[in-house]
Picture 1 (cartoon, rainbow, N blue to C red):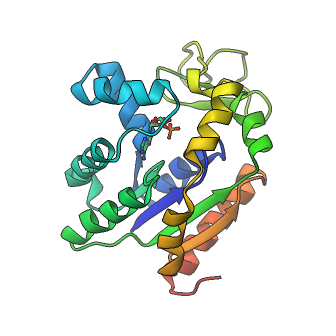
Picture 2 (cartoon, protein in one colour; picture 1 turned 135 degrees about the horizontal axis):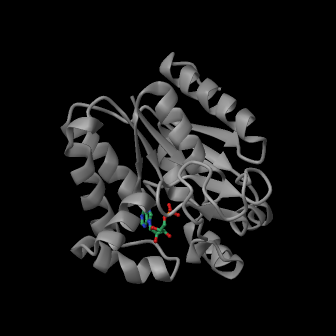
Length: 220
Ligand code: AMP
């Protein structure tokens, strides 16, 4: 099963993608995480992606597509993947279709998690990450037991530079899923829309229901 989670940044998409991957026994592939890893490791990919990431802009398609294609080749990606943060352009969506087709596979369904700009800014500016183990917290909806400290591993939490409010509005302007990409999935009857402003559990429930419907060939 190859699932695509779409939506603007800050809809809880990353948390949901991890949950769903775990629940369904699929690999979670986050393009943002892959870029951040590359940055940390100081690879050529990280160096080339850095300027776009610092500006809150998309990394060029060629670089992003090559990175995902490489990840798709690895053995742990063969049983199925939940894509998170990829694709973000029509070109990336088409490249993903082609890469999967070359492996005799197809992306099952694209799940669009929706939320208004104001709600996203509120959410993102309260988000804290654990730089050590990757856990995600939020000042309102998921505070850690001790402020600023990761519940899972005890490391000091950090805020991503691109989660600051002014950068968030800029990212939103540039990074809303483009209509032409949504149209690509909609035209093929492969797009399901989920209200991302609900409680996290309700979003998970709706996502799993949409996946089940898609798997059984019935779409709402
Ligand atoms: P994210 O964690 O998904 O918000 O991604 C962090 C940053 O990585 C984004 O602001 C982009 O600069 C870059 N990025 C992640 N995924 C993609 C993608 N599919 N296409 C282009 N750039 C991406």
